[in-house]
Image (cartoon, rainbow, N blue to C red):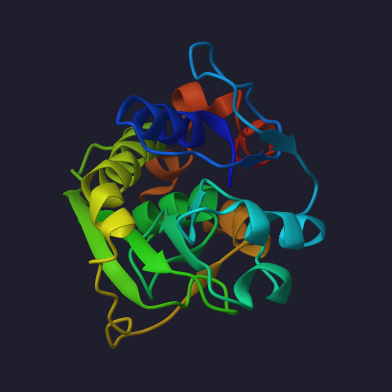
Amino acid sequence: MGDGALLWRAVRHAVDGGKTVDMVCTGGRATAPSGLGDLDVRTVDAIGPLGPEIHSACSDGIVWSIDNRFLFGPEVLDGDLTVYNIHGGPLPGYRGLPLATVAHAILNGESEFGATLHRVDPGIDTGPVVAVQRFPIDDEDVFEDVMVELMEACHALFTDHLDAAVDGTLVARPQPDGPSAYYGSKAVAAVPEHRDNPNYERATDLGMFEDFYPDAAAAWR
């Protein structure tokens, strides 16, 4: 479940590795690439109504959430499914939207960032952690640089842990102690309030992501 290039890269990796992909649920931001075979692809506005079909279609009991804007409710979480999310930020300090987590990580002067593989619970990015893929943020890195690194870290988490997830050997542990912060749509809207921050230009230099986040690109100039 999810959207965009990260979702379809994951699907291709799974298909090329001989894994069964029972269903793909997407918001339709990017179309399925060619060469993936006859997949059951659903373009949806919400996950909840598909809950019974997801449960019946899922042959291995595993659901992957990749670049996913949909929230999981009891329609999916209640029952025997294990839902793994690949989140664009280290937890619990950077819950929320990647657009916001990346910008605020730069504004906050972080020297390191990362993606997190965690099990999904009823909260938002609050489930137990399986693995974290970290990378440095250099002093000259801008939003575009960090987001590219983040996307690669997210994909690596999927490719490195897919087999173990299918084998049932992944171990999830409670999120580490530390401040918890949520960076959602309000945090996106609040970015221009930080124009006096010495890292503002770096945090708002979207580069090739301007077309992907046009509203932020306009608001943050």
